[in-house]
Image (tube, rainbow, N blue to C red; front, side, top):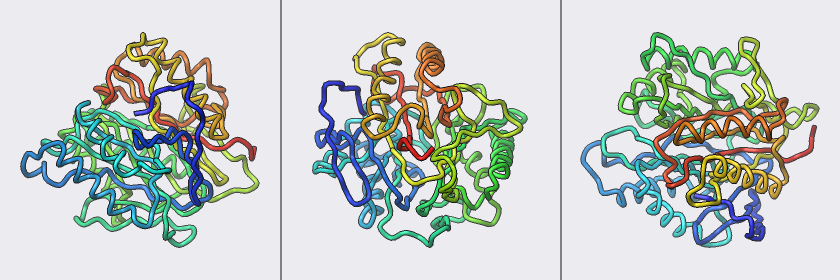
Length: 386
């Protein structure tokens, strides 16, 4: 929901566990939130309870998912919120709730995307990253037990340690969603072996898939990949692609004081790219969660919209003590082929080919904020520590 506003003065809000950059109480959102060496909690995609059984008004659904979110917040602080809306008319309903909750000095970073959602009649979903008031045991990822067996964890706790971001991986398999999911999970587990990590280290999974109406098949196979252990939280986005599914992971990793703050890695089986890393590994404390970035002009051409969005990215990362060489994770939501092509071009201009972020690019039905056709959803690290 964040547009580029180059003339707005930088405003910072300091808390014990987070630093807010350009918080806006009129939207309930911040341009970015910086966390230091803090334990984090990652949630699964929160969906309203009612629509799977009977149609429920959109405003009631929005209230329900925020009620669930509120239940997680008493001892935690919201850092990043990802909002999934079925249509653009849901976005202002969500913003109204954000303003209600974050009209004071603190606001979280927020990203919107338009997508179909699991279950008939569901029009909104949320997932979140929070700093944790009561951290889990040091060095251990703890996944909360789901209420229903065979479902992913509702949340997972990441201790104050390093983080790995694995770019979206996709295996076609026999072309079915089930086989593609199984083979993609096998590929991701091979990446974990390369990193000398275990499936138990996975903190969160995001899957871009089609069609959403068959998403239960994909979730079943993602959960099954973890065997008898509780699977990590899962979030879903419907994309427009010839591939049935692409899956990315967030993974806990040991802190390495003698290593660079961030590493850009390629597995032996994969080819390196100048515009995205196959894996990024954060070895030292500190992450910067940016809100979804949009271009400045209301009805831009594709070149202008893309350049304005990256201008916003450059400005906000610098305000947070980072830059384009310290991007750890990128999700690019693109709503048409032309904007996707412009994105490909500008990344070759602006990124250091030795240091591009781990990334997923998803062609989606819309950003949830028309007429914008591009949203950048980014995570960075502070400069230094190389």
